[in-house]
Image (cartoon, rainbow, N blue to C red; front, top):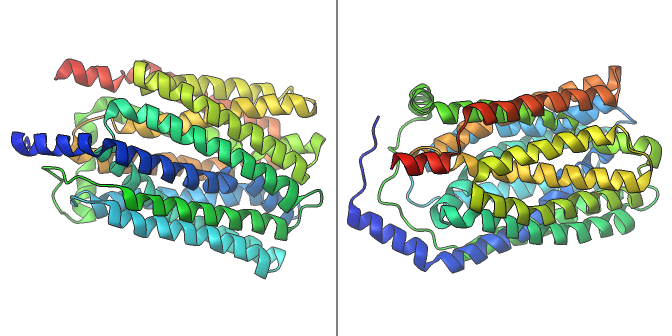
Length: 429
């Protein structure tokens, strides 16, 4: 259905609000990302959590795959619900606070499980809390990206994303070092991991509070307030009317299957290096700092050449780093590999999100985010399970080769069928 153009005066007022509050909103998003990402990276980095689950499960790679799959499964279920909750609202920030609080509560529960429960019970509890965390993350991925699309102009998003991730990465690297060396130590146990995740909870909670300073404008038009069932019925026509977006979200999902290797990078390296707190801390710092510094590069490429090029470049780097891991020997070589993986995965994550925002009409942004995120997280749920089975029966090398294949075909599909939406939109206007 064609969108009714907004009243020109109302649209001008809306754009003026964005301009007048840009510095304030940019700073608030920067502070939120700095503290929030610092905390969540302690939980989502491919080091601490896989090693913790391996410890609790007495060395089961399948258990590691299940843990990561539970989180992705939750994230696959709720993006469309998140879109339906906010797409008709002129202000989405209040819903963002509720969902953000739910995410942080799950991080707290993961930390407390290791302190209060036996290892076997803690493992089952972590499965549950990761699934619930994923449910909140699925909605959060829609809400907070819609908020950013409202308050940050398109030509500033690359800079914001780059600076936010750069600063968060520096802080996260320092916190990871302290967590690895002083909280987990040379003889890892559930208490050390739990204290690390408790620190993550504190940092992410302070980060959420930074959004109190955001001034959210009310757009002149929003989508109609309809039921989730009716909104789902609009998806086929949206996909038919925008083949570039359709090809993009399918290719992104295919490439996301490459995430199956993430929890197994550290376990593969640990075969020769061990999984002491010092090793975990060192490789987490390498992974995090690489993502930190590279974000400035990804942001520069995105603002000047578009997110599509940055997306494809990140996939190429991810493939090269994964293949290099197969030949890695010694700590220094593994540090170089984790630097490449950290830069690549951070680039993939940030560019995939921002590229989704550039297709189609503004009123459909929540639904497009939900479609892209849901399909990607379905792949993200299947990937770790498949990776765990491959690791158990065929070895880690099979996981990495399969991951590279998915990344290659996803990138090839974007390269062949998805033009840079920013330039395509400019030509069509």
